[in-house]
Amino acid sequence: MFMYLNKRSYVIRIFGRGNTAVGGTTHLTQLTMGIVMMKRRGDSKSSGRHTDKSRQSSGERAPARKTDGRQGPSKRPGTFKEAPKIQRLNKAIADAGVASRRAADELILNGKVKINGKVCTELGTKIGISDIVTVNGEPITRMKHLTYLLLNKPKDVITTSSDELGRTTVFDIVRLRTRLFTVGRLDRNTTGVLLLTNDGELANRLMHPRYGVPRIYKAKLDRPLLPEHARKIAAGVVLEDGPTQPCQVFIDPADSESAHIELYEGKNREVRRLFEHFGYDVKRLDRKQYAFLTARGLARGEYRHLTRDEVNELYKMTKLRA
Image (cartoon, rainbow, N blue to C red; front, top):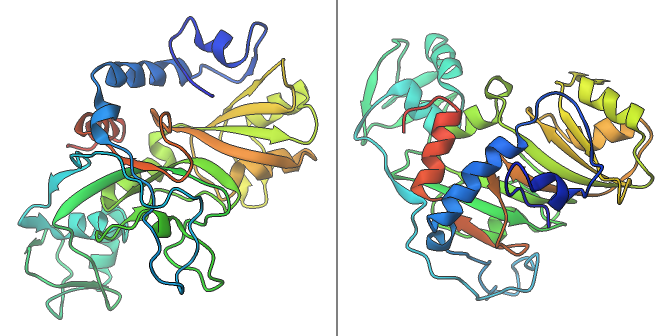
């Protein structure tokens, strides 16, 4: 299992002696220390694990894995923050996952936002919990409570809210009454850490390259990764949608067909496209870590609520006030 334990052991535990790292100063050990501290306080135990519930109707899609009906104990610590009764309009739009605060201001100035059926173009406007807000004619969802989940995404599961082809989505696994959305996406064949929330402003900041939130992946390639290719990937590559940011690339000398890559942005299928750019076929791709969060203790298809400390740390990383 891919685990970051501390500054002295992570190289030996993950890669063995002689590990080859390509890139600048890594964030890996710094982030892991936070995880170890939280683990010692018992945070991950208190948050509980969940699996997707049994399908009662024959018309529903099959679950991603056979863990039906099993659910760990939970005090639901990830659903703890109550939305304010009075709120700035741009923050309400951001919290709904429609746009960032800055983009929400542009929508307001351009007359795209209505409050109770009336166009509002005044920045700084505050709204109450009973006010109805629409953006481009579509009502936004005002959340009473904010929820934060970590899912260990299985293979053959997509991250959209629905699928016209009838494929299993993450929302078939995480079946809550609360409307959630994913923090970024993982493609159908990629497994691992996926965050879900209804905190739109936090989600937008976690995904924005400005905040440099690390995403760590393990890729299994069809052939050994050459060091010169690893160096070029780490320096940044020009893809069809523009250049990629510099990143970290680690080659396992015990298995040179396996590589770990740490990104700080979330371009569509970026990891696969980086390796494909140099002629590699990615056989398996697993996201091991998002920010400081891992799927340790969660089987594929299981999820847990984040703890208050974990959410507060995400707020600090993205310069938000908890």
